[in-house]
Image (cartoon, rainbow, N blue to C red):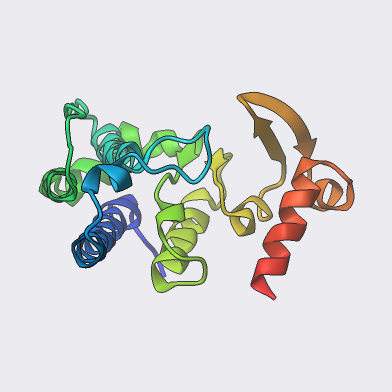
Length: 204
């Protein structure tokens, strides 16, 4: 089955963003039921050195617009990061979905922007999907199709995707700390090996 660059990008990004909007609905219901101030969630971080929740939603929208705009050879629309509520984040998501769906297939398929993926492929949305979910499988499948027969750079947090690459480069604090084939790094006792073991344990 052949899949076009448009099919591998716009519908899938729009679907993941719609799922993210649904998650925000559940988050709002939780806040309302527990009487929690929305500011607590907007600024929440799982780790001290990560972006707050609101920024991560903003980035998810920004990356989606960036991918589609660059594939289509368009300027990337700029949105001001001024959302203070979940409702405002949902509006940002809606605006992003409207933009990426406004780009027609012919503007993407066969353009220089699409062909540039022969050198670089970035799938920033894969980690918004639960591992093993239909959304995750769809995005991972789209990544495999887009990379087939090409030299590609796959930016991934999900190790199942990293394991399919010929060469894995591990970054910590913006620095390369390891690189090599998956099998070699997984067998070593370095950062990648520890991540792989932890990820494998979660799946068993």
